[in-house]
Length: 130
Image (cartoon, rainbow, N blue to C red):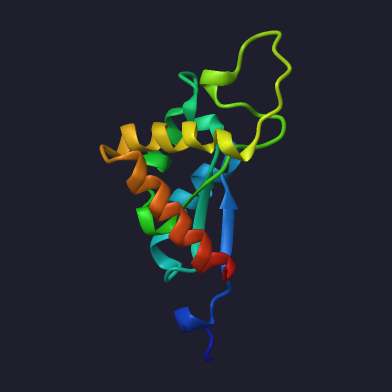
């Protein structure tokens, strides 16, 4: 490649951005990684989007991420989604709790929970080669 040329999209590695930290939001949004990744960049969202006090930036990013770039998770074992986070409760988070993340995304994207789950599953298979 010559200086200043972008590599072909097929040559780009797969990148998973686990976005629960506010510090990731601005770079992801400004650089446009989700649009330029050629299907090789995925955004993994967790229980942080289920809280009413989630940052507007995080919620906007969750809304904007295309379904074909979305992965969902929980932040297990420590970070329960809002419906399960009860003060003084010590239950550990499990992968089964990802349904709460899917429900929050479905509401925000005005689609079904099944749409979110099938997209995330297809993306995980593609991303991790399973």
